Image (cartoon, rainbow, N blue to C red):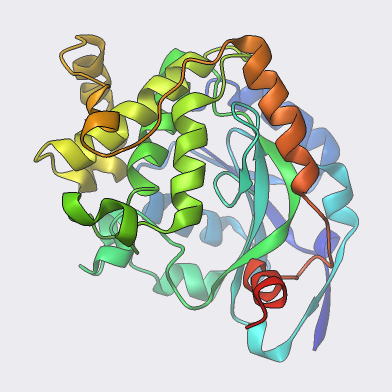
Length: 301
């Protein structure tokens, strides 16, 4: 086992379009004076490789451009088991729009070797698992704890794009599009729960309604049209889809009638109430406690 002080690792702030990236960079530079920044690299795979190239340490921390870390994270010491030595760690992030806490937008800790060897997104190796995700690699570990807050609502398009991408990705079965008739059996039940939150919660924050509409449209476009869903990883393509969505030529009620998904138009107070009470379900453990460890313990595997 190796002990790694987070403060000894390079920290890379990875930005592309995020409207508040300069504001966040100022805060992160003050919080983490040794932080570096990689900006404007197109493509998720290429951007992560640029972050690895910017790091002088083999292991490095990555902060997304719309994510603000908790300062206490940089005081942690990670006890890395030998079998985890070459693994990626992804902690949960609190989503400011809808209160969800899962891997989307959270802090991550990579090795340069892993990043340089991976083939994902625009550089996919051709498998469904790598078309729009990193997370299906056996060495990509989902951690239980939450050490940051994600703000994917810098403006209307930013919020819509965040919702749209999750509205697609949460419907996938290990990266594959499920058959319409098997939607509820092929999509993991936790993903369906998260999807419902994206579809319905967020009216209490600025541009939250755009995130909700984006999530609904992403699910509609994936499951109820013949659209090439691999465009989810192409930010240029998403701009065209946003323009398409604004024309309003679609019927969101089909998400209920054809997919059996419940849609509600919660007002601001109901949305805030939901977020206040779901937050109570979170319990913190040791920094490198994985989600699967706790699931096994609870379910008695």
